[in-house]
Every structure is written in C-alpha cells, then in structure tokens.
Image (cartoon, rainbow, N blue to C red; front, side, top):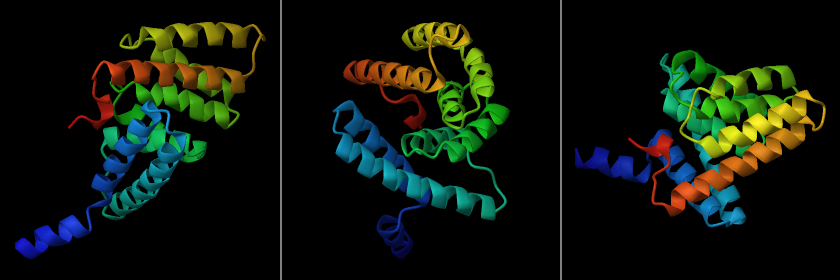
Length: 181
C-alpha cells in the first residue's frame, strides 16, 4: 500500500497534473505573469493530451469539466481544432457549463467558422452568471453582423472580457469554477 502511494506521489495521474498545471497557468494569468502562464499552460496541454488519450484507450469518457478545462488550455495554446472537439463533446453531454459556449465560439472563430461561432455564442446568452461578458458579446455580435468588425476582433474582445472578469473574480477571492471539486 505504501509503495502504491509513493508511486502515485512520484508519478501523479495525468488528470491531477493537468489540473495542477492549469491552476498554475490561471494564477499566473491573474498576476499578469504571461511567461509563467504560457509555461504552465503548455505543461497542462501535455497532461490533458495524455489524460484524454489514456481515458479514450480505456473505453471511457473524460468528465465534461475536465474536457472544458482542456479546451480552454487548447485555446490558450492556439490549438483551436482540439479545443472545439472538447467543447463540442461537452456541449453535447453537459449543457450546464458555460465555458464550452464562450470559449467554443472563440475556437470556432479561430478556425474560420464564423457562422458556427455566432450560433454557439447565441446559446451563451442563457447563462447570466457573467453579465459583463454577455454585454461585450452582444455588442461584438451586433458589430460583426453589421459588418463593422471582423471575427478576429470579436474573439480578441471576448478574450479580453473573459480575462477581465476572471481577474475581478480572482481578486474577490472566488475559486475558478471548473477547478472546484
């Protein structure tokens, strides 16, 4: 028993490492330490890749919250195709999580799928937990639909709004929702 525990400490499961590295990246982002955030996000992505591969190989499904975290890490790592694959699965299995809608739209926008991005973002309106993000989203979609801005600008504005909201929540002592157990 002690040997198993020691082995688990020395070689933690990919899921635990992914969560830990995601949390480190998040905290570094909140401190505006972009170098550390990028380093920890890259480590989290590697852990998520391993976790997803191991879970799928065992014939199981990755929990939606973990897939959502993986998708966010993939967006930050500029892997929008992998991000959208995660978010699409989460939206199919658990429509109570809001991140797969807002970040999923960003991933779709980065893939050049503007119509799909808009469709996913419009589903985000039913979440009222982050009105500051919803307000930015509504304004950006209005501008986009009127031809006054492009998809890259919409994605950049939404990313900035998400970061601003996350920083406000962090300063208020709120734990990152998806990291709660």
